[in-house]
Picture 1 (tube, helix red, strand yellow):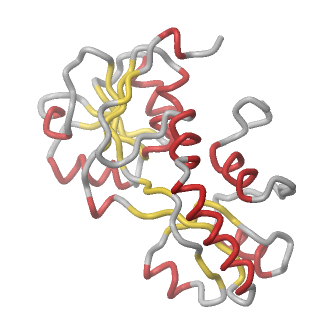
Picture 2 (picture 1 turned 90 degrees about the vertical axis):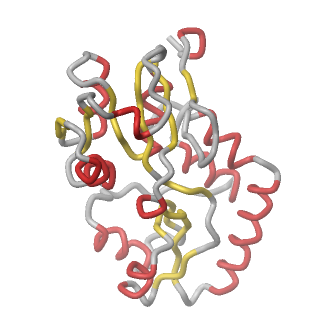
Length: 219
């Protein structure tokens, strides 16, 4: 975001990691485009990459830092609807983003679902009562609910749909990786990562439902 008060949680983390960091903006919908930024030395670090063996095997020239948070699925519901877990979605119409882990999870459970193209469309369907709840990736779930009063976000325990998130860099930059790993360890231990995620409403595994109230939403 261009809003200096909420530029994005990973932008804030990058600034904590390196206060004098410069940002290079590129489209991120195609991984090969992103990878070239690193491999061609147009940038040195890229946030938000999965610690996943398939990803590692497919990208032998990319090194991953230690993880800084866990990304997973979350249920978004209206405050007071009594939805506290995945099983509470039985008999309800659930909004999902097409071809996401949340979509697959709802299908596996046999719940009635309505499919949307983006997380924003999925949340809007919930806001306008076209669906009873939504299952979404945790970062957009938390952020969209944070901006709109009257919603709860609950983490779904689904090991197959969770993954640790790291920073990518060139494998040859060994000293940089050591420095980044050390900085992430410090930011996690100091609860700085947790603090930044909380400002964006992003749930983490094992926490109670995050409820948004009108007084929490800036105008």
